[in-house]
Length: 412
Image (cartoon, rainbow, N blue to C red; front, top):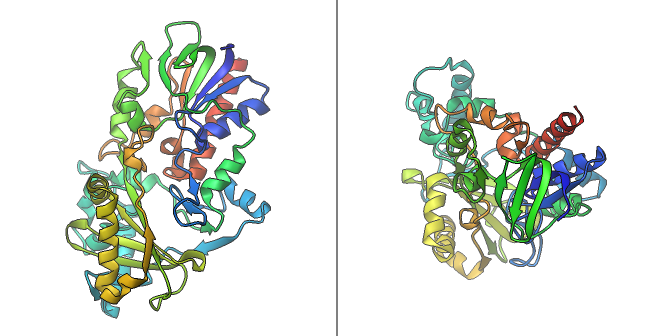
């Protein structure tokens, strides 16, 4: 392989934007992707339901700051603003009363107030706030598993506070993953080529792959913290302890989708309604109802329960979602149920989860990983996207920002 200025590890949103930024600056580069496609956790498939469905990220969060939104508009794609409010609330099989719905909205507001006024302290767990307020039930869903992909006793208050309000949020009928694939279509990528080892005791760096070794002046690593914690990529010599520890301090949360077809009925719901079923032990499930008037009820489970369902397998997950719907709308609904599936990002070797959330007391891990190693090894991705952490648009902005820093460093 010919030497290049920069190697980019990963062809997700961050890797693709880094490559485009390097190319615009006139630098040579090589992009290696372990999977057999580009996009990373942005992946639209029509194999399951005969229409575009986002296996990975689906919301165009923070549309006023998300570069993908303008590109979706320019491409003439179908967009829908989603207000993310709970339209239908159930406790098990029982529909919540108006008072209970009002209570939940008040709880959300109270939690937001407590977050704003939090002044630090020894207990950085989000549960330390919810345990002192009636907001616990609301926090157990949207402020925890459905937002950060982790249960609220595993979430850092400081890390949560640093994340931006992501409104306005949009959906696209054609698929967010397809939009990312369109964005990266002109980027040359070596697919199915994982980087096994990065050597930095040589001039610049040397990246070892199954297809050979390539030298570069710098490397931008966009792999998830979990992939790095599992040592899918070995570094020689070892990285500084603070960087290695940060991989573990930013574990991957889990958000699992359980879409199921409901044919011949709309259950009294309207497209894009939000339906939340609260259950004991955080076994909650949220449904996005019939997006774009398709026949899909898209279920979401998060946090520890999502990991449990992943271990149980797709059949168990599909049974769970069907049982929840029949429990509310009646057993006759089963004759209307069609195709279904379950996403399982935890089983994807080169991802290992949905997105990263700092452990309590470890919010500084993001800052540490933003520091390059020896001005040769740089990290980028959704976990380093500032206030837009955990978003595909944030990952793209992270890749662009890091690539600009590399351009500046190499020009010095």
